[in-house]
Length: 222
Image (cartoon, rainbow, N blue to C red; front, side, top):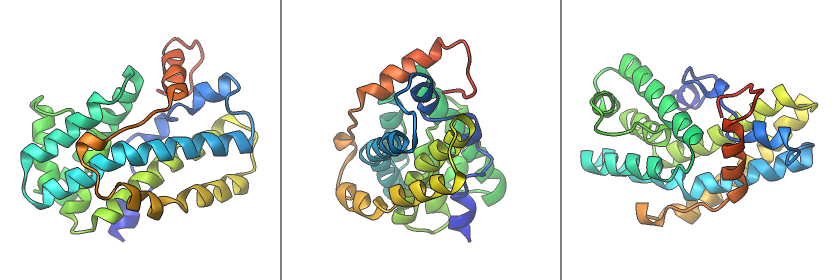
């Protein structure tokens, strides 16, 4: 039940306000139908696994070991790899909201201590790290934390697609089911990676994000 609650796409951390780059992709015709949406979401999820997903595992292990410096290193590693302003805004806004929720719901925990450091300006407060700390505080597994992170990336984008494209909602659910089938294999690919191994290469995402900043009509914050 804890996994269900903290992995819920309707968790009040602001995911509804973001599209993870999909809005610009639709506006510019990069994504125009179900097939191109599938390719775009799959690419985003694959990039997430090898970048932010690695930080989830690193932060989870640091939390389990009581390594505060390790937690904050993972936090800075995520923030430093966001090449554009909107992606940085997304991750820290949602991360802080998750930390505030955890502090209220869980009480004193490693997540609450992290929130204090965010407020003091000692660490940026990125969402993947927040997810790791919440799951560590709940006594769940790093595998659960990684799965929820991956699901969140795909879920945010598929939910956004229904607000921008003419799609059957059941087709979108089938797409989400298909994309998430790779979560176990993605975990196996990165389980032994360190923060130095964090990497992502998807120039189209960065170009779309830079164009979105100057867009005249926007439904989403990124």
